[in-house]
Length: 159
Picture 1: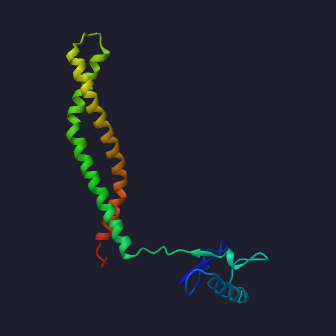
Picture 2: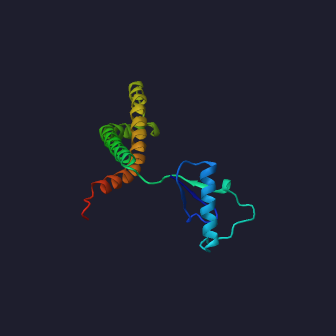
Picture 3: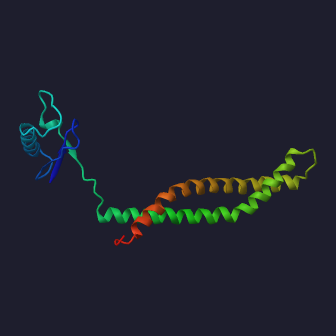
C-alpha cells in the first residue's frame, strides 16, 4: 500500500495498493478526481495539476521494533548519565581542593616550585572534572526525555 497527499490539503490521504509508481499515482489521481466531483476536496487545484505533484506519505507509525529501539536508547542514555554522575562525584573533592590552591597564584605570597608543579598537575584534574561536569549536565537534560520514555513504556495498560 502507498499513500499520497496534496501540499494544498495535507489532511487528504489517498491510499492505493502497490508501491509508488506511475500507475499507483494515476490511481490516486482517479481517487482525487472522484473527491473533486463529489465536492469533498476542500481546496481548488491549479490547472495542470498532475500525478507527479502528489506527495507520498511515508509510514510514521511506531512499530514494535522501533519502540524497543527507543526503549533501548533511553536505557543507554540513563546508563551514560549514571556513569557521568559517578565520574563527577569521584573527582569533585579533588577538583575543589585544587581550585582553592589556584588562589595562591593571585596573592603576593611566595610559592615554591613544588607547589607550582603540583598546581600544574592539578589543572588536568580540574579540566577533566569541568569537562565531565559539562557532559553530565548535558546528559542530564537529555535523560529527562529518556526517563519519560521509560515511564511511558512501564505504564500498565489498565490505566
